[in-house]
Amino acid sequence: MQFKKLVFFLFFFPHFLFAQVGEFVPSGKPFATIYANFHRGITGSATDEAAFELVRGYLGYEYQLSPEFYAKINVDVGSPDDLSPLSKIRRYAYFKNAYLQYSHQKFQIEFGLISLKQFKLQEDVWERRYLMKTIADEHRLGSSADLGVNFHYKFHRLIDADFTMMNGEGYSSLQMDDIFKYSLGTTFRVPQNFTSRIVYDIMHNEIPETTWLVFTSYNFRSKWNLAGEVVYRLNNAWKTDNNILALSFYGKFNLNEKYQLFARYDKIESNILEGETLPWHLANDGTALIAGIQFRPIKNIAVALNYHDWYPWAANMEGGGFVFVDLEVKM
Image: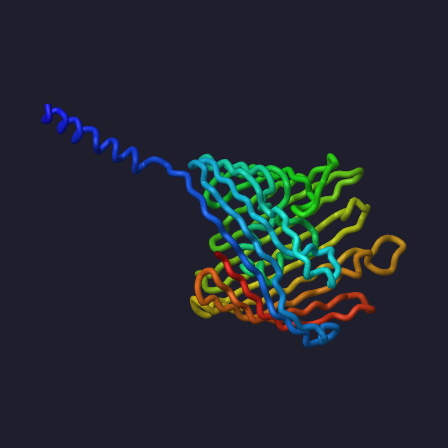
C-alpha cells in the first residue's frame, strides 16, 4: 500500500509542480513621480523672478489582473494652467489615468481615462517631460490624456496603427455634449534608425477642427538623437481659417551613462485673417529655446541645469530668459 502511494506521488508531483510554476499570478505595484525646480530670471521681463517650485506629483497604482487584462489609476496633483499666479500655491488632484487595457497577440484596446498615443512617442524621445511638455501639449493643440477608447494593432515590428475616439477636451475638463474627437495614427520604423509617426485628428461642431501631426526621430547607436515634429491645426476652436502652425526640433548627446547634453527649439505662429493686419493668435506666437545638461545619478532620478528663453512676436510684449535646475524623481 505504501509502495502504491509512493508511485502515485512520484508520478503526479512533477505535473502538480509544473501547474503551480506555470500558473499566472495577478500582481500590482504602486508608483509615484515628482517634478520640482528652482528657477531664476536673468533677462527681459523675467529678471525679478526667482523661486523654488513643486511643479507636479503623480500617485498611482497598476495591476496585471491576467495575461490579457491590465488596469491603471494615476492621480495628477498640481495647479491647473488657468489659475492666476497668486493661486498657484493651491493644489488640485485630477485623475490623469483610470483605464482598463486588454491585450491579445498583436491587438490592444484601452478604455477609460487613457494616455493618448498622439504624444507618447514624442515624450519618450524628448525624455524631459519634467522640463516642458511636447509642443502640441504645451500650446493646447491636444492633450496627453483624455476620456475615450483606443484600438491599437501591431502589423509588424516595424509598423503599427491606432484609432482613438475621445471627448477631445483633455483629462482636466468635463464634457457633457455629444461632440467627440476622432484620431487615426500610424508609427513606422523605417528606414534604419528612424522612427516616425503621422496622426490626423478631427472634431466636428458645425465646421471641423482638424489637426495634422508629423514626427520623425533619428537615433545613432544610442549615442545621440535628433527629432522634429510639425503640428498644423485648422479652424482652431471651430473658427473658420483660424489656423496654427507649430514646429519643434530637439536633440540629445550622451556624454556617458550619467551625463547628457540636450537642446530644443520651438516655433508657433498663426495666420493673418482676411481684412486684418496682424496674426489672430499673435499674443501667443513666438519662439522658445531650451538647452542644458542632464545628470542621472541613478536610473530613477534626473537633474537638469538648463536655460529657458521665450521670444514673443508681439511688439508690445517682452520675453524673458531663465536659468532652471529641474528635478525628476520616480518611485
